[in-house]
Image: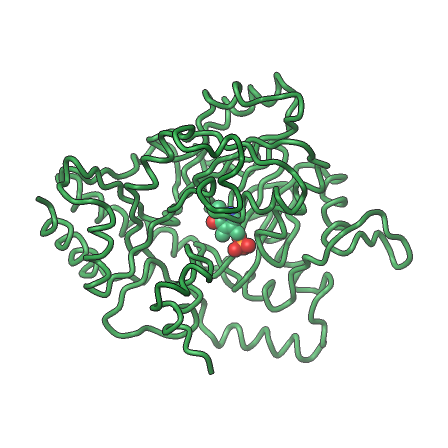
Length: 403
Ligand SMILES: *Cc1c(COP(=O)(O)O)cnc(C)c1O
């Protein structure tokens, strides 16, 4: 058996693996390593409840392709989220790729450099040129004021991300999209269950994409979904995720295989029962971080916005070196020495990866806010089963490091 922990600990191979997530791949499904705190851990339902559903799947031998759990989960999820249509996917990346296909997006798309790399890979896989737009310092989301100047005759869409589950400035984005006739696809992979004044943020834009990866607040091991608002679009998406099949003998377009299996759908159905509790616990723990760290100079946290139900997908802090007296990487290394596996989400910027740094919009200096934030950010551990004493210990370390 390969010891993935060893691979991850080797700095040179961390670059070859997915650099921002190699550790979660190593940690997940391996049980606690005593004394080590990870940035996130999946919440899972009692295993007996899952085994019951597995027996059902064994009996029917219906493993995938619109099985009974798929149909139940799709309907239950739409209801839970407060959206009209959900199309389930094998993962969030395939959902992003398919969302762009569904809307027939081509040419250039304006997006953010401050996200998980899959956001921009999805454009690349569609032959679309990404155009990077700078972000707002207070939300880390795309800055609507900087979008307009990036629009060219080739621009067809905007692909913003609700980073850390903080809602984008959806009203301003919509205004620009309307004036210029652009589509809007939200990468909502961080934003499961996020609402403003009780209304889901998933109903903004033409489509929204979710991920149920093991690192996300709501997980089906791997998984994802596209939220759409009309039946015709839902049907098109469902054809596309199943090779383009409209029926047994009709292929309506060059689709892909991005279907969610019965196993994922079954766990998803169970997860729905527990997700509100999990989000509430995350909120309480985030509250403890806020209380502990509000007096610590040089540590900036995201502002909690009135009326927004955040899911606390991550707990980022921003270390202002001049005030705190230490660099982010200094702090990062100190935490690691203490077996606290903090992560730098998002560092580097997508526009700084070799694949994308040659693009005109990726030129150093062109994205000043994102370039600063990526050097300041550090995500602290946060998951529903994290102990309050653990958070106190993490905060104590930060206080000790302050110069
Ligand atoms: C997780 C994530 C993705 C990719 O989702 P997968 O399900 O892992 O394929 C895309 N964008 C963002 C912002 C994400 O956090």
